[in-house]
Structures are given as C-alpha cells and as structure tokens.
Image (cartoon, rainbow, N blue to C red; front, side, top):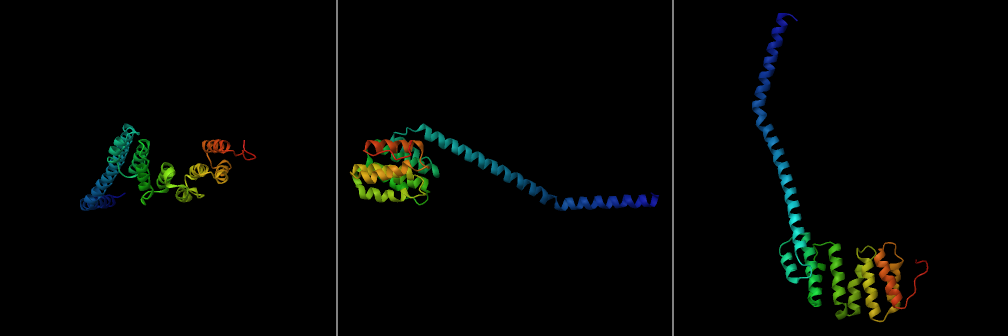
Amino acid sequence: MSETDSFIQEVTDEVRQDRMFRLWKKYSPYGIGAVIAIVAVTAGMNWMKHREIEQARQTGGAFLASDIASVEDQEVLLGSVEGSAEALARLRLAAATADSGDTEGAAALYREVADDARLGPLYTDLARLQAVRVSAATIGRDEAEAELAPLTAEDAPYRMLALELRAAIRLNAGDTEAAHADLNEIIGNPAATRESTERALALLLSSGGEIPSGTQ
C-alpha cells in the first residue's frame, strides 16, 4: 500500500470513528432507556411472580391453620381470602355449618355458591350437589330431583355422585326400580371410579337388587 493510500485509509477510519461517536452520543440515551425498560419489565415480572407465590403460600397456610369443623374459623378464613380461594372458603364454611347441625343455613350457603355466575361448574355443580344432599330430607323428592337433573347430564363433572344421591333419594321414597336404574348406570359406566362403583353395588344389593350380568 502506498503512503497516499495509507493516509486516505487513516482519514477514512478517523471519519468513521467520529461518525460512530456522534451517532452514539445522539442515540445512546434511547439504547440505554431500552435496556433499562427491559430490566424493569423483567424485574417487575419476577416481583409479581414472587408475590403470587407468596400470596399462594399465605393462603394455603390460612386454610391449613383453620379448623375445618369450626364455623367461626371458617368465617375468619372467608374474610381473609379472595379469588378462587374465596369460593373454596365458602364451601368449607357451608360444610362446617352443616356439621354443626344447621342444615338449613348450610343449604343456603351452598346455594349462594351454586348461583354465583362468576364460578365455573366445578364449584357451582359441587355446591348444588351438596345443597341437595343436606336438604333432601326437607325439600321433598320432586324438588330434589329437579335440582339434580342438570347434574346428571352426560358432561356434568359430578355426574356419578349426582346419580348416587338421586338413587338414595328414590330409595328413601320407595321407588326401588328407578333407584336401581341409577345404580346400574353407575356400575356399568367405565367413567365411574372404583369407589363409586363399590358404593353403588353395596346400595343395590342392600336394597334387594341383583348384580348386573358381566359385573365382577
């Protein structure tokens, strides 16, 4: 390379460096701001995740610390939780109320959960099922079966339990034929749990029914 070419190269390099320096001075605040924003968002997400974990830990501790059989404890618990945990706390309060002997109050609490449009069927159907269970002796067969009807649909989450409860209500009313139909439906359903099947078999045999053919 000649001295002239070398001089031109040095000048070109100097110009390039000067241009880069001026560009850095002009745009570096934006670049630094972007980096800060990314760090801030990441830190914020980590803080929110930590907060959710800590809230879940505190909520779980509150559930474990409360006496599930105490109405007073469950009322305190209900006042200290929110979101999906609130629905579970309301169900626990209803259960404690039923265990205390106040079946009417328990049924009312269960129906409040069952009628809460914010909740999904895992909560509302369970609450409806429990409401019928604790009040079946007082509301009568027709009303009980009417409430259970949507819970026995093919896609209902607690269908086997609803059929089992309806069978018990029908047996109590003396309608063994209808009750046995419900019990046989449970026994022959592959979706039924082993526990549900065993209870259905026991109830069927104790009420004078026969084990369906093909059942072990």
